[in-house]
Length: 93
Image (cartoon, rainbow, N blue to C red; front, side, top):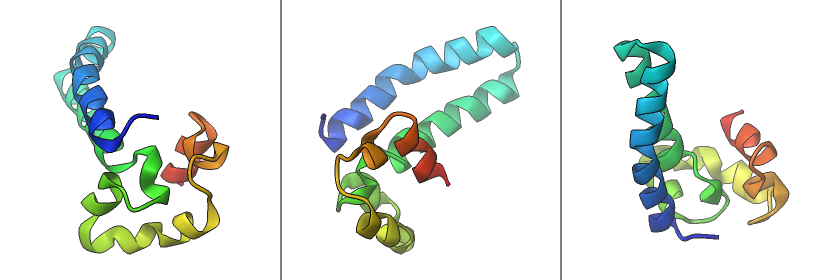
């Protein structure tokens, strides 16, 4: 698994593809902006390492206490935290 900085680089490198694809599908600048900003928030704030003291966890600042139950309940790098579908769904919920 890549480190937090690598996750950030992947997010930034993928952003142009997400933005272009979004505009290609919608032809709507407002929707493209919403999709692109959501992608950035997801990449920078909702990464799979919220179950440990990671860069994503630190970025939450004073609100990082929200993730304490998640850290206590889920082991690091389990399918529940790093699974592409289940892990993402749990973090969003």
